[in-house]
Image 1: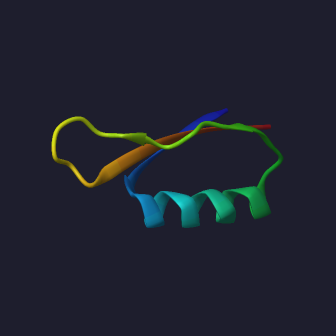
Image 2: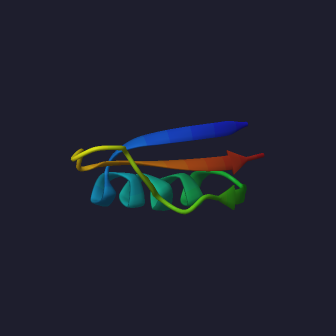
Length: 48
């Protein structure tokens, strides 16, 4: 399953750690900053 997280850098990093504690994580992407002047980021996580 692939999961897309979207939020501030702190939010997506915190959610990533919570997901790691609950699922078997296969891969985690680097944070991608949204275009423009947005303060939001995306992280893609693959879990089994």
